[in-house]
Image 1 (cartoon, rainbow, N blue to C red):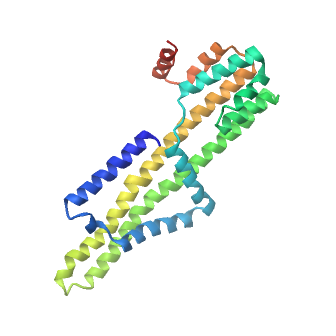
Image 2: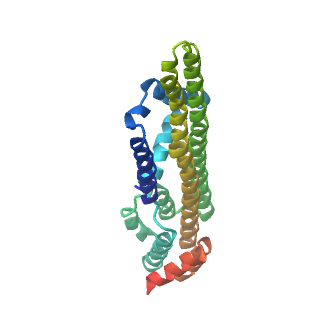
Image 3: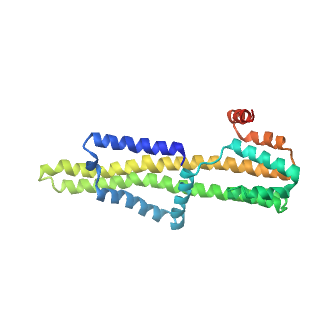
Length: 257
């Protein structure tokens, strides 16, 4: 799992639970009907707004984003330089052995196209289409999670209004007002927690992951094209350094020492 995500989850929910237990107690914040209104309502509205396949698919995108960190751009540049060294020394067909060491389907496909002798422009076009598809999936996932972050507080407010209506109908019993108000506000609490501690951070994480993965794919595409063109490993490395920041370039140089 991504370390920052894990720290954020533990810290955020830990502070909320600690605050609840320090006050009225965690039990005072548990209300099943309120949970059903917020969670069920958010899910129902999401299913109304997006196709079922897209909603189910977003879980896979989130799982991949949270659980599987990407390799660093520096590591990818070094890998492209290593592939170039093998290709210049033994020929492009020698890269077929390297495919067995890879796990990334995108990179496997790119190297396979080169080994199979596809023209350089065709390789670029096919990998560019793959990149476009990946960006679309990430954008669709982010849009769904963004929408859930918008809907959760709204259903929290709906639950609160329902609770207030029920409470106002029992004003003849003052002893019920305090408890009724507490229950009415719990749904707003649930909606705010779900939006600000789950959906909105996940949407931001998806956007950041999309940018990181796009950078990695662009490095792969340029690296594979340069290998196919027969460029020297050092030339490829210098070219790919253009994709990363000066600090990352310095880290890449330090790693060589």
